[in-house]
Image 1: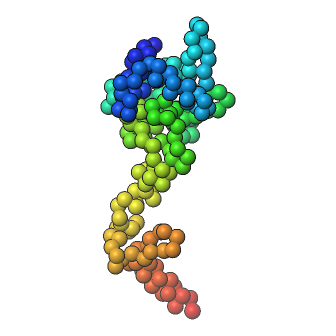
Image 2 (image 1 turned 30 degrees about the vertical axis):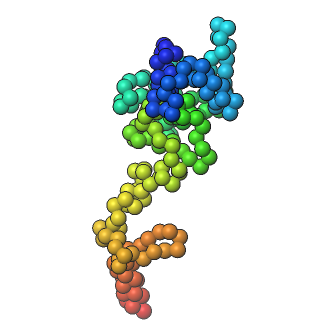
Image 3 (image 1 turned 135 degrees about the vertical axis):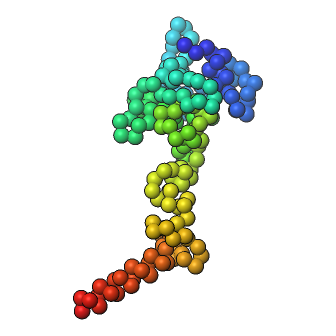
Length: 189
């Protein structure tokens, strides 16, 4: 079991209030509970929150190591899951909420380490959905970063056709496909 002082260190490391004491942490936890992110319960005559239950499911290491989630993992997405009341939330999102507060609307939590079960707050970044997509490893994100078409032609101002929907097209590949199409029509006629 992690001591309160150790947990306070994890919660407040790199925060704007690094010298805050346990009472400040308790106030922050009460505020998160008021926003619906935490549910309080009474244990041994003291008010506690799901923080104890959450961090008990994490294999905590140093700040630069991944902290793997050791409890339930969604089989489809492979992200850690944590039950808060009647809802199931991503464990990485709960770790960010404990550390920085609620995630703003239109933002998501991005794993900088690319390990989906990691809940180390130092490895998590709150970004917009578009930025998270750009940082991803999906084929479209990789192609956008490479600045080349699928056939290897470089996207230069002379070789790029800008489409109205924000996509771009390789002029060399487009011209080749138009020539092939025209040739196929000539043979068929």
